Length: 280
Ligand code: AMP
Image (cartoon, rainbow, N blue to C red; front, side):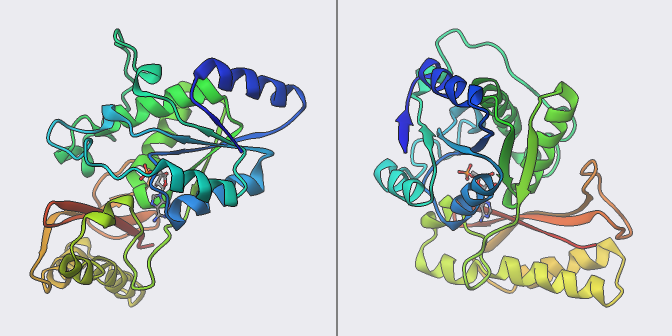
C-alpha cells in the first residue's frame, strides 16, 4: 500500500495503472476507521483492481459551531487497518492541497441538500458534494463506494453524478452496526458510558417501525409517533428529527409506499447520531 499526499503524484500513479487496463475503485472517507469503513473497502476490492481510499477531514462540510477541530484522527491506525484490508493507495492530502487560498467554486445539489440533515447543517452537503466532485476529478474512478449509514449523502451524490454526468458508478453499501444495533460511526467515540448505553434505542425504535409496517401499518404519522415515543423512553436522547421520506427525492410521505425510508437524527449530549432504515 502506498500513501500519496499530492494530487499530481496520485494522477501519475493512476494513469499508469489505468493504461494497464486496471479498474479503479474509490472510497472517500474522513478516517478514524471502523468496520463500516472497512466494509466499503471490501466492496471496492471485489469490484475493482486498484482500491484508492481518500482520507481527508473536509473542513467545507463542517459548520462554524461543529466538531472540525476535535474530529477524531489516528492516521497510523487507519494506515494499518487499510493495509490489512488490501487497499492499494491512501490519498491523504493536506488542506492546502485541496483548498488553496483562492478556492471559490462549490457544487450544490439544490433541494435535496436543504432537507433532513440540511435543515440544521445548511452548508454541510455543499461541502460534501464539492469534495466528492473534486475527488472524482482527481481520481477518475470507475466505481465509488459510499455507506447507506449516510443515506441522504448517498442519494445526493447519486443525483450529482446523474445531473453532472460524472462517468462513475456509485455503489451504496449497507450499514454496519455494533452488536447492540448502534450504527458504527467515528463520532461514537464522543459518547460517555451512559450515553453509549442508551444510544442503541435509536435502532430499536427503527426496528419497531419496520415491524409495524410489516404488520400492515401504513400511516406515516403513526409510525413516526411510535419511533418518537420509543426513543423518548431514554432520558439522554434529544430528537432533532424523525422523517419518513421517499428515496427518490427525500419528500415526506403521508402513507408508506414502496421506496420509503425513515431517517433520524438524535443528540446524546453534544453528540449527534444519525441512522435510517428502509420501511418498504
Ligand atoms: P466518514 O469517514 O464518516 O465520512 O464515512 C466515510 C464513508 O463510510 C461514508 O460513505 C459513510 O456513509 C460510510 N460509513 C460510515 N459509517 C458507516 C457504517 N456504520 N456502515 C456503513 N458505511 C458507513
